[in-house]
Amino acid sequence: MSTYSHDTIAAIATPSGRGGVGIIRLSGKNALAISREITGLAPVPRHAHYCDFLDVSGQVLDQGILLYFQAPHSFTGEDVIELQGHGGPVVMDLLLNRCLKLGARLARPGEFSERAYLNDKMDLAQAEAVADLIDAETHAAARLATRSLQGSFSAAIQELVDRLVRLRMYVEAAIDFPEEEIDFLSDGKVSTDLHAVIDNINKVRAKASTGRLLRDGINLVIAGEPNAGKSSLLNALAGVDSAIVTEIPGTTRDVLRERIQLGGVPVHLVDTAGLRETADQVEREGVRRAREELRKADQLLWVYDAAQDPDNQGMQKAQLPGDIPVTLVRNKVDKAGEQPGQGQRDGLVEIRLSAKSGEGLEALKTHLLANMGFQGAENTEFLARRRHLDAIDRALAALEKGREALEHQQAGELLAEDLRQAQQALSEITGAFSADDLLGEIFSSFCIGK
Image (cartoon, rainbow, N blue to C red; front, side, top):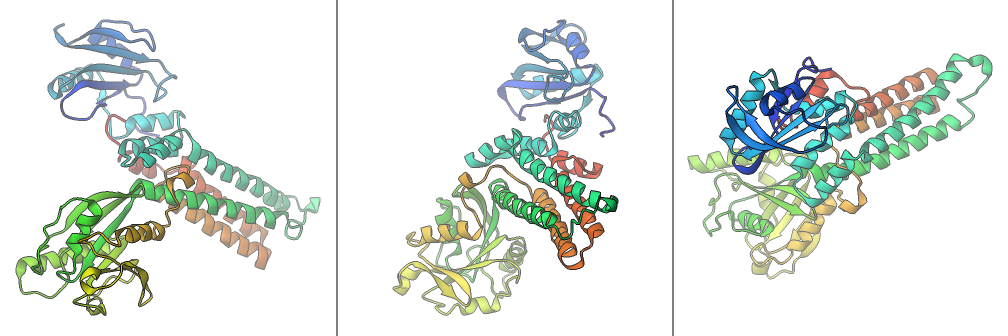
């Protein structure tokens, strides 16, 4: 539990800058007393009160709306006050400082959501969904974040945990009470139930993997030799002329970035300098940065010129990272007199297109979505994070180990331990089991007012 869980905290809950409305949020046992000092009112819970906000000398700082949410019927489960004034940065700063001088403490990032979790107003997956909803970059991501906030992901995980608990009870009872003569190793029940749990976890993992794509997207890096048409491909995919395109090799000397959507999936598109040996100091730095981006890519598009390098000889000397999926893009097929489409070359998928005319571009987009394993937003139910997938993978690994112990070693004690580890891994997702450092890492990524 947080060291400061009994303090009264305050923060600006609206974005920085100027706006029509700015909100100061307070939470804690002294929130109501602080609001009385500022407004002179004893507010009624869940009623809007129009009033003056006063400084220490009784002068009016601002005018606005006072809202009081009485514990436990609030976002954090504590007394919560919202002071809704005008959204100027100076006014907000004056009002926040007034709250701090009256005994509130400036909230840490994510502390309001952390308190909601600690006070059992939501579980950990739901708390993370608050941040995901704020950060959503697509309509699908926002919709799925809302579903996670409502508990769909938590319910799926809890169902899996309940199945594991029932299986653990059966196995451990058979171990602890051998006089009952329950031959759980041969009656088939444990094996059947274990296979069913593994199948269900794999189904949840598939949905979580799609949800992770909708939340985080992918890093798609465009690479190739100079003048292969990389910048033209960036412009074509982004739909804007972000990159300068000329016939001069080495035009792109720095990393260019665009954020686009493919079928609702956020894509962080990166155009890099052409990979070649060069004496030009500036271009050499661009090549170094390009190689850094290659190492961080989720997917690599290797672009080559169908007319100038029809056999893709340039890729052989490019020294690409061996652990990153590569799609070949045979560009400028219009100049080479070839038809756009999809094929295979050297064991890799090859998309034939013209970045300049746009022919074949839809085939590339379709391939990228399929290669990501994206089945469409309609086929998933919730957003997920990398840590969720890691927890699910650890649970699956423990269960596979337990299946091995059951089927080949008939070791009930080993199976029981593997079931315990799988349950513990899944419980980390909702926070039923979690370490303090994990909580700190999660909530520190939130904005201050949440």
